[in-house]
Amino acid sequence: NAGVMQNPRHLVRRRGQEARLRCSPMKGHSHVYWYRQLPEEGLKFMVYLQKENIIDESGMPKERFSAEFPKEGPSILRIQQVVRGDSAAYFCASSPKQANTGELFFGEGSRLTVL
Amino acid sequence: KNEVEQSPQNLTAQEGEFITINCSYSVGISALHWLQQHPGGGIVSLFMLSSGKKKHGRLIATINIQEKHSSLHITASHPRDSAVYICAVSRGDGGSQGNLIFGKGTKLSVKP
Image (cartoon, rainbow over all chains, first blue to last red; front, side):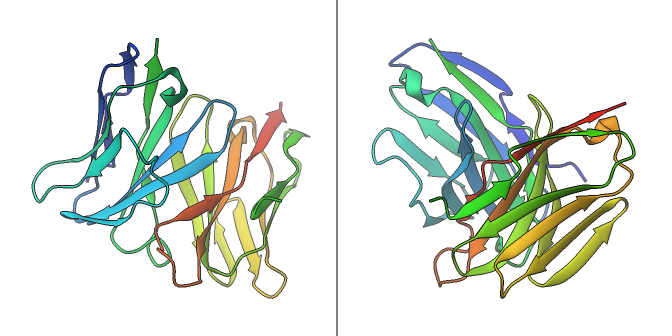
């Protein structure tokens, strides 16, 4: 049973470009969470999704960021018109249940560098 | 003041020592997670607990709900335990259970 798969592991973008980060949860997991880790800072929650639904996006910046988890395929975190401050590690986690009842399984992260 | 506080921020130990990392929180929670992150690497979930104590190999996690405090213990520490250990909580106030609040982490270095 493969773990949580994130790709790309490393992504370099110039200011103004778009970044798409993908997360394939563990088989059988229907809950996906995205977190951001800025350089020298702690992890911050961004968004919680179930299949085809955004459950909680209270941690998402109001502009340029969006997330989806379609019926088929991976969850995608999309950042439009990237700026240098978006440079960070983005982690995805999945769970068979909500995070207060089911263990979380994390991916290796996607490290975004904005030039 | 952060809602989840960890201490110490940095910890250096000699191989074989018993290690304790502390986590205090100020919000109502439904679960607490201990995570491990190696430099430049991914994150591994060590424990999820809502009461009592859990043990896995040389790792032990305890939680005291009344005191809003959790500890992570490592017995017979080894250099491969060197990593950042992160405490995170799921709110218990009816908010989204997927919305974790993280501590800033404790950087552990175990010297041979």
